[in-house]
Amino acid sequence: MRLLVVGGGGREHALCWALHRENPGADLYCAPGNPGTAQLARNLPIAADDLDRLADAADMHGIDLTVVGPEVPLARGLADRLRAEGRAVFGPGAAAAQLEASKAFAKEVMAAAGIPTAASRAFHQLDPALDYVARHAEPLVVKASGLAAGKGAVVCATRGDAAVAVRAMLSDGSLGEAGRTVVIEAFLEGEELSVLAITDGRAVELLPVAQDHKRLLEGDRGPNTGGMGAYSPVAVATPALLARVRREVLIPTLEEMRQRQTPYRGVLYAGLMIDPAGAPWVVEFNCRLGDPETQVVLPLVSDGLTECLRSVASGGAPTPLALRDSASVTTVLASDGYPDAPRKGAAITIPQQLPEGVTVFHAGTSMDADGVLRVAGGRVLNVTAVAPTFREAQRLSRETAAAIQFEGKVFRRDIGWREAGRSEGVGAR
Ligand code: AMP
Image 1 (cartoon, rainbow, N blue to C red):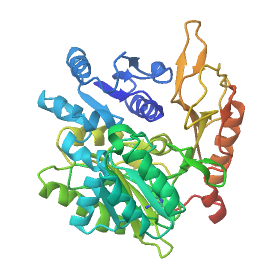
Image 2 (cartoon, rainbow, N blue to C red):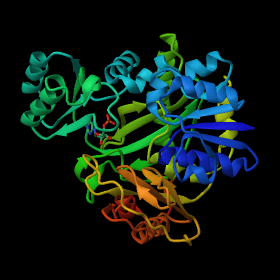
Image 3 (cartoon, rainbow, N blue to C red):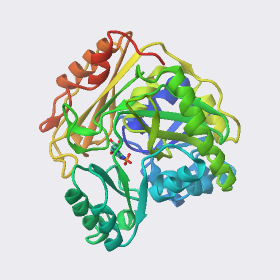
Image 4 (cartoon, helix red, strand yellow):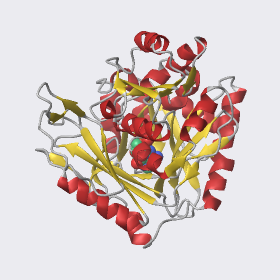
């Protein structure tokens, strides 16, 4: 079997790791990959959004299954392109990927399908947007409608802050094209969950549920980031809640997408807020596996991932995943200055011997000409620990994160703090 993973971050390293584990004899390629994927796959020096060269590479290497990691190539139609050439590819086409690429579109779909989500309105002109802000309750949220690499949502305590955010996006073009349309929405109170559903557009197979930590600093303070760590499973994600999420969110969304003649195939990631009464509300949809959720969740899949992805990629239904009854915690190591202006270039030292159950996934790293591993991005490494209990996984992840060295290292020591406060053991799946 010849497999291609598109992308070069922590999510793609985790995908390569999981695919390699299930298929040690397969020819595995990653484009562009990173120094972590290079240990498992052959890295191809092709950018994740270079559709022409990716299609050529799939052809040249006779790829049987392509798994697309990031949202940008999906939104630009990589899956359509490969499918049109008769290849099995895991990920939605461009039209279906609009569920992530346009928040205005996602809100429209949710309204049509009656899916619980924050009340909102979309604007592309400054004055009506400011007018709406002036009449909105506080706190409120301003979002760039388009893809903004995790920087598009601004949670605003006051109308004044919201007006600043709206001006920056609509008037100053701070987020470029992505911020030409803004969505202004009500603030949702509660606890966030990431539900990742592998789907052929009708049936859904859920990955273990994760909780991400978006804020940069301990105690959920500081600016929003792409994610500073995650854990899985999450005790609040009970079977009853997940049944409700299927019924009220996933199935109606997929049905609405089918009705619009843009059936959704791939992984539908529902970013949810669970309100104090236990009801799920959709914060956002993503059209791909999460980051860092992938790094925390895939090590909990003991078998069946390749078959499930292959089946959906070929037009079939998702097949069952075998899951481990363990807990997983991922701590992100970022570089000083992240998310705005991360410092790059520092040399990285990773201990030779990692504790059992610990895997270090590379994200923003590069290997220099002398074979020295260096910081090359904002989020540098992800330390995932799998253990019988949440507390043990949390301890292993945190201690390994502390043992890895580079100048300007930043990480949170409180990943999973909600879970730690809830129980001693592994949460319900
Ligand atoms: P998004 O890009 O829509 O996923 O938003 C990024 C993060 O901002 C989310 O993970 C939440 O932490 C926060 N956020 C977004 N929208 C809301 C909302 N309506 N209420 C509360 N927090 C939100």
